[in-house]
Length: 460
Image 1: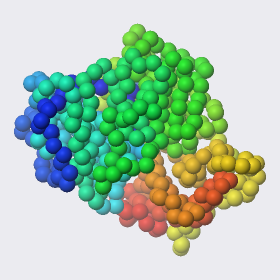
Image 2: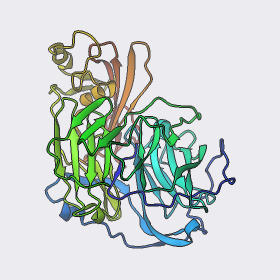
Image 3: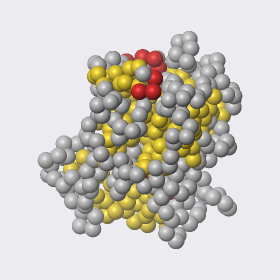
Image 4: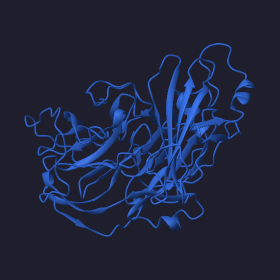
């Protein structure tokens, strides 16, 4: 689920008809450095002075490296300045593509080591489009004839990283348009389109595929209706009554559903003052907004929305994680009690709190966030991140009878001993509401301070 704001996808979407082929089963495992045919000339990063521009705002380094340099764009026979591109998966895991080294990386620490591979030389002029369901990433590939671009779906799972799952020939036609994520795939939205951008009811230009090549379940997505000042995300809708940044079309917008059942969105002017306004909505209907103190042309790259409610912004040779909004009370003010001997946790007082809620008499309970979704409940139980440096990722397993399992990983802790913590939350899916059945607890240590994988043991 990539949410990019601040500069359009201004690339030639090219195709050579007749030279495309399905590459099912092919594995990208070869090169470990940038190919000689794609000569790169590193140049100093000229990104914004984030520390000065965001003085007084809550932000920290995100631990994601950023490179910029001149890359030979083979199909256009010219050099282009390119910088590291980011996409965010539906589980919140960032994915980076470094066009200088051609390396694609899953930006979360894994027990088995870093999940990464280098794009082989035959795939030229690549751009990262999105990270979709089931650890599949999507890249656009330019071709010699300026009519359309191919799209490649590749596995970024630790089990089969770099395997090409499917190639979509001529999937993205050259046009004044943005490529945005929808519930069932990548959608193309014209710069001057009225109504929701993207229109989720439209057939995707590129459908999501899972690692088996089949169709996965739809994922949560959002849209921004500039004319009506309406945001839709997941199953909710919000009206932006007091917008500050309202521009003539074409504007640039992005919407991302958040783990708590709300949304985070951004809208940028592409003419005039070129301002960007950020919006945050919650499932109880409330909405707040702030104006970013950086014009989007000054970002030196796109800003990227995250489902934990944060924003990644370029910061020289790295990315910064900005937390532009205060936390929102969810009603339960309890805490987790950890039992080291059993590796479990207890949500103290949660059942008593849920017992006091007046649930709807019929139908799906929709009490924010406790009746919104298993992901929203698990996110609330895990608590609010204590620093913008923290990355939260949430993965929900398939239902198992009357229960489901949600894994919440929070890493990048500003702690000299503990690097990250993981909660495996077992939830009853019977309505009304979702109830916690069991919580398994583990943590991972900072380098040199103990175990590097997640296990129920203290760090040194």
